[in-house]
Image (tube, rainbow, N blue to C red; front, side, top):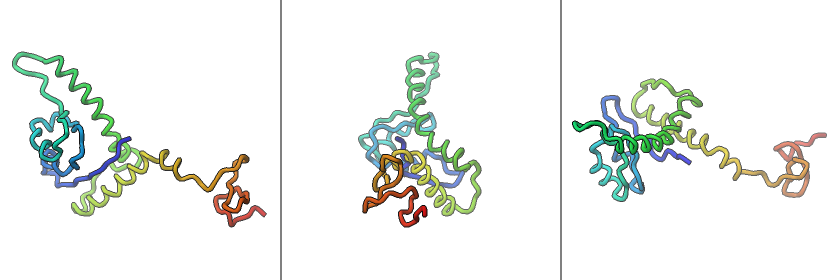
Length: 160
């Protein structure tokens, strides 16, 4: 279950590598980054001391292509693809494909609300299982606290 725990918003001129310490909360065990995060091991160590750096490494060297490193990078990419799923939901379900600039503060607040909805959307089945009504009867109707049967969600509306 993937949950978005932090959202950082910056101007387009700021590289995402500079936002790395703000994205980590410190309790991570592993940090999975793409090749853009190469050389950020020290920043990862300071933000999350117990985290293992799992960023992709260079494959091509002067000696040729390192096949073992290529296989490791492929495995890392498979894990990272699971983390991209909240962005898929944000773009496809909530149709947030184009950022309209309304100021960094307004865009940041919109993204906070959007990712909160993404978290709810991703966990909707788990949450609806926990939010059951007072009880279900065998016939499928709801049973109120006093034991009365009713087929509507509102026990005060009768079918008569």
